[in-house]
Amino acid sequence: MSLPIVHHPDYVSTLPADHRFPMAKFGKVYEYLVRDGIAGLDQFHCPERPPQAWLELAHTHEYVEAYCTGTLDARAMRRIGFPWNPALVNRTCIAVGGTILTVELALEHGLACNTAGGTHHAFPEFGSGFCIFNDLAIAARVAQQRGWAQRILIVDLDVHQGDGTAAIFQADPTVFTFSMHCDVNFPFHKQQSDLDVPLPVGLEDAGYLKTLADHVSDLLTQIKPDIVFYDAGVDPHGEDLLGKLALSDEGLYLRDQLVLEACVSQGYPVACVIGGGYQKEINKLARRHCIIHRAATDVFQRYKL
Image (cartoon, rainbow, N blue to C red):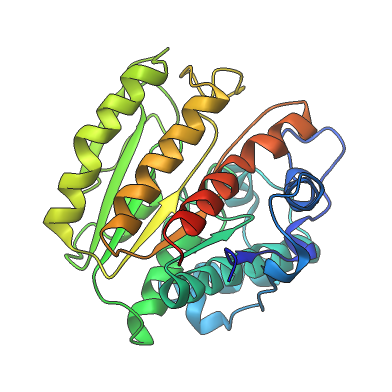
């Protein structure tokens, strides 16, 4: 058995040529996973678009309906940061379906990775920061509703705080939100996660990894989750355009390995999403996003999942 990886060709949608969001990276991640020998074609699982009722487990009916039908007002669209088009609606929903499938596969096999996901700035009634629907929150609600899991730990290591996720689960003791992020960065108005660890600008590998190690094992012991959702954003990298931290590629690999080893060695399943990453060199960025799949493959094989 090999590491299950979730991907769909529709993870890539059209955006204006000058748009700063690197949409093409999702297709490139798949390309490099195969080209670099990280994954074989038989490891990939293709998600389906989830029913609208599942989206509404984490978002208001009014918001979901307005976005899906293209009737969301211009101000709300500006806050999201994308122009509206039907292909992007489909892409958004398919990506949510991808995270749900990743959760299902992680519970079955112990570990699974998406090639998209981590849209943690989406709130119940609006989207923000290139995030339309919160795939982590929706997948958590679906898992609970379908009886797959009840106690969920979200480990969010994107460089930006998972503010939408924190807000959605603010009063929910069944989902524990942990966000370790750059303090002086978007969102400038932070929400309160169950545990926030703000980091100083310019933090490098050693300091980052020590801080992370100080928290992960204790969290697992404290929460004893049925599953861990891991947002492995690569925007803490020193070359990231929106990051302000200074991790290296090796630092990102060690970070991912630390999280996955801690969870899998204690029998906690992990569902991984790729999170944020912003760089003009799309091939370099895509390969950086593949670090989580490399780390997960190594852990999967080591523990013979």
